[in-house]
Image 1 (spheres, helix red, strand yellow):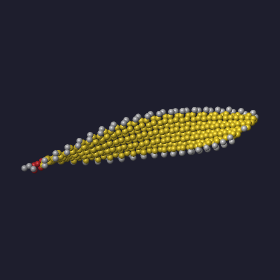
Image 2 (cartoon, helix red, strand yellow; image 1 turned 120 degrees about the horizontal axis):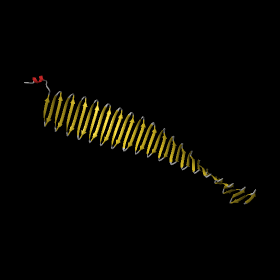
Image 3 (spheres, rainbow, N blue to C red; image 1 turned 90 degrees about the vertical axis):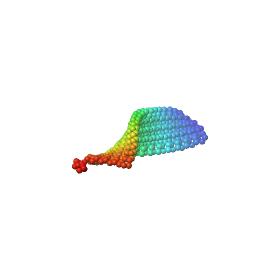
Image 4 (cartoon, one colour; image 1 turned 30 degrees about the horizontal axis):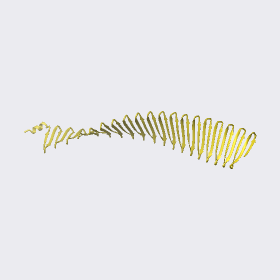
Amino acid sequence: MWLGVVGGGWRRLGVVGGGWRRLEEVGGGRRRLEEVGGGWRWLEEVGGGWRWLEEVGGGWRRLEEVGGGRRRSEVVGGGRRRSEEVGGGRRWLEEVGGGRRRSEEVGGGWRRLEEVGGGWRRLEVVGGGWRRSEVDGGGRRRSEVVGGGRRRSEEVGGGRRWSEEVGGGWRRLEVVGGGWRRSEEVGGGWRWLEVVGGGRRRSEEVGGGWRWLQEVGGGWRRLEEVGGGRRWLEEVGGGRRRLEVVGGGWRWLEEVGGGQRRSEVVGGGWRRLEEVGGGRRRLEEVGGGWRRSEEVGGGWRWLEEVGGGRRRSEVVGGGWRRLEEVGGGWRRLEEVGGGRRRSEEVGGGWRRSEVVGGGRRRSEEVGGGWRRLEEVSLHVSQVKSQMP
């Protein structure tokens, strides 16, 4: 061991266990150097502050405290860490495995930056809120909580998403593949709007009901549910369809190619009306029976089935025909060209009446036989020629 006094200071050198130590005090400051087991440490105290350096196993650590602040650096295993504390705040830097992290604490808040694999992340806490940013694989994400609300944005693969929560509600915007989607929740309800591939969709939920609108290929569809009922409207290719469900029943309307179809289900029965090519058809089912009406080419046909019986009526070319089937038999009434014919089948027999040209004919077949009655209006000359 060696001790020397130089210029009002002193130095001390010692050899211990294959290593050595050096201690020096000069000008009010102190330095210490130590080498043990292949590594070394260095300590310096100057002007009320101090520095400390250590090298161990191929790496090193450094600690410095000057003017009330403190700095620390460390290199271990190919990486590096550094921390700094100044003016009540703190900064921290770390490099490990080709990546980098940095943290900073200033004025009651703190920031952190991290760089890994060509991307980076950033986190910031300021005034009771926080912000987070991330860039990874060509995309970017950002989150923010400020004043009780929250915002989030994301960019990935050329698309973008954005979310915001303010005052108990939230909004979201998404841009993907040239189109975009938007969602909004306000006052207990929500709205949703989407534009994709030249078309548009919109949904809305307000006051316990909801509405949905879609525009595709120049046409649109709309669905609405309000007050326990539902309405659906579609307009595509110049035509229109509408469906309405209210009070346990439903109505359906379709307009295609200049024609119209309408269906309705109310009170256990249903009705259908169709107008195509200048004509009209109507079908109705009520009370276990049904009626059908058809109007074509200026005339109409009507068919009814009620209570086990059936009736059919037809108006064509200024005349009309009616067929009725009741209680196992049938009746037919026909009026054509100013005349009238009536046929009836009852109890195994049949009756026929005909009125033509001012006269009347009647035929009856009952019990295996038949009767015929004919009334014809004759001219006076015809009557005289028939007198004896």
